Length: 144
Image 1 (cartoon, rainbow, N blue to C red):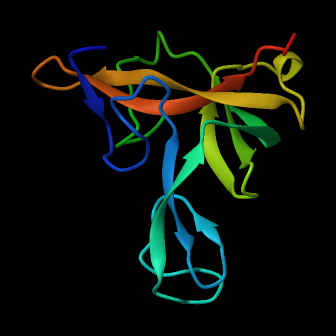
Image 2 (image 1 turned 135 degrees about the vertical axis):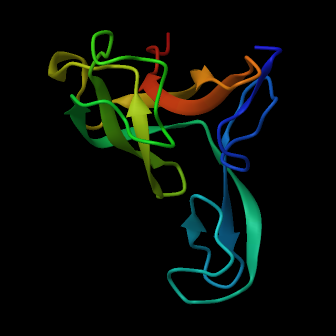
């Protein structure tokens, strides 16, 4: 993915060998936020610091989206080539729940509480042919 850039800046570390979500943490109460916020949603404090939120979590809840995403999340798919995909909330180690597209796209593949990991995907190409990247979560391989 040498000819690639994030669809939206500041959501994840890129380029990186192991990309992770980037958010903020309130230095007053410890609350995390994603995407990054300038004020804390828990205590309204303004003392926010960048925070690496990691790239792993557990599936908190999910559904299957059976319609094409709207702008700005549109893909190169057409109504004829569109494939439904999973959407879920991933609970990160810090306790924050993050909404994400999921690689898995059938109810048989998804179980609340299953370990998940983040991966980078190409959403579409821009006018110059550059891959526009975002993140999604997928089932983490079992640890041996």
